[in-house]
Each structure stands twice: as C-alpha cells, then as structure tokens.
Image (tube, rainbow, N blue to C red; front, side, top):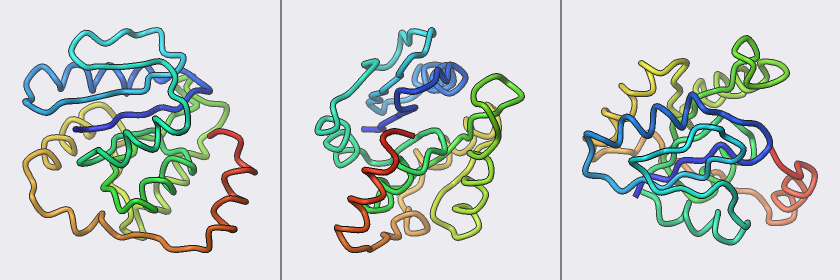
Length: 160
C-alpha cells in the first residue's frame, strides 16, 4: 500500500490529483488522507481526515509514503523507517503562506532522508522509480531520538 498525506491544514489539490491520475496505471493500492482538498479522487481510496491512531497505522502499513513536506510527516516517516517522497507546497501556487516546505525538503534531501519532487512531472517520475525499485535503502534510514524529545516536538507542532 502507498500512503499519501497532505495533513489537514491547507488544500493540496495538485498532489492529490497527480496521485489519482498515476493510480490509473498502477496495480498498487493507494490510500490518501486528502485534508481540505476540493479535488475528490476517483481512482484511490481516501478520507479527508484521520485520527492520529489511524494516521500512524496507515503509515506503518505503507510500502512507501508520498506527502507534502511538513516536518511532522517527514519525522514520522523517518521514525518508522519508511521511504518518503515529498512534494513541497508552493506559495506561488497559493498552497501555503511561504516556501518553508521547499527549504525543509531541500535540507532532508541533502541528508538523503527523502526523495523530492518539485512539480507534477517529477512526482510522476519518482513514483514510477519507487514503485519498480526493490532497493529503498537510501530512504530506510531511521532517525532515533528520545521519546521525550519526539513527544515535545509533536506537542509543539499541533499540526503541520
């Protein structure tokens, strides 16, 4: 299963639309948490919102994760050792207030913790590469931290 998440704060139709279109040609089961998206997928399973418990369960079950470049989502994937492709929200496209997600994605990419797609074409290519690859070692790196630190970060971030 491929788990897609944009969390809940802002719509991210661009990401959800690409995943829905890509799913037409794929045998993979895809489940998406679409948040406030106005786009409704027709080729993938989805829910607008997930309780934290279900969110973590979906991440745990996933072969890999596709997401916006929110810190909470990236950290959760890294904690679980899950490969993740991130597509940063762009302020110029009205997807966020600023481009901090681009900065976040570039930093995690430089550390080789994520794959990044800047646009729909790059996302399509990353998805195709990931779906056919058996070697996710580049992205199975886990971060380790004290449970107290992780809880503090999660509590501070209310949502990403």
